[in-house]
Image 1 (cartoon, one colour):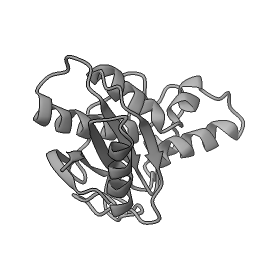
Image 2 (tube, rainbow, N blue to C red):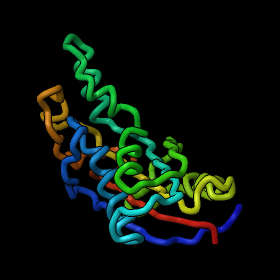
Image 3 (cartoon, helix red, strand yellow):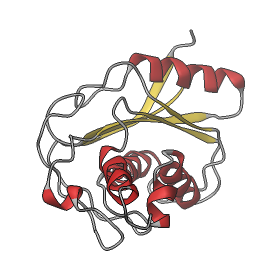
Length: 189
């Protein structure tokens, strides 16, 4: 496997609520992914600008638990809010990041067998990033590992079209603890 060189790293600490993300509701997952991506890309490039051949790779063992709960709740007898269907695709938030930063590389979302601990990315995500770089479709890959705590707050349980961002609960998710994310921008060494 080709070795990787790290260009920038960013973390979103467990329990730190991410800022709201327009177009996404009822969950902290997508705002969490966008916020840590923004931190990492800003550390490497400053501001969005010219198009970059940067791929996006999202790794999450648990995925967007709050949106899944909101969809289950809505499907149990209420009209399904269209926004929830849109944000149930993990590539939706990656598309938001790609559009904001003019990233033109591949976009991939994976579910590794085990959640990454806070401050880490799964080894299989880094291996896939190396493959994406070796393929030649990107000069850099932004690897994001994001995990969301189990949504047990009343806001998450009652999520619907009128719901806003659910607060992080601190309950144990797949990696334990509260919502957390890490982003690493890598290139071939």
